[in-house]
Amino acid sequence: MESMKLLLVALTAISLASAADLKLGTPLAAGTPIALATLLSHSEAYAGKTVQVKGKIAAVCQEMGCWMDLVNDAGQKIRIKVNDGEIEFPKDSAGKTAIAEGKFTKVVLTRDEAVEQAKESAKESGKKFDPASIKSGASYYQIQGTGAVILGN
Image 1 (spheres, rainbow, N blue to C red):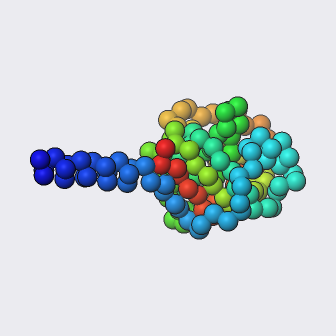
Image 2: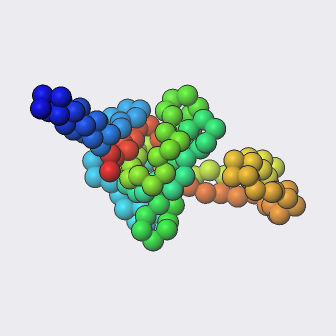
């Protein structure tokens, strides 16, 4: 009977530990998350500001864990990018919910930079890439991440 109690206590502890939130980087301080749809539809207004967003993790960098993509229910996506080595997002966290914070920035790429980025993305996803498919430079928004919480859902 005593061994059953110990087993039950151990299983409960494991269950609670696996459900714990994973805190990465600096503690979140921006308050309430901005809806991803709002952030993306008013991107110029938020550019350069510290923002906090919440979403489902769609993908994580499988090489260094240096970025993760968050999506909302409508499929809108934002990348949370960190400097290599500052934070490492767990590579197996796709499908979990996360809250992330950082500076919302506009990234402007020349054509050569866009080609290099697309080449790297194709390599990470195992797809073929044709540099001729990139006709010009590109721009997009991302969050330069400073902290995140991956919820133990």
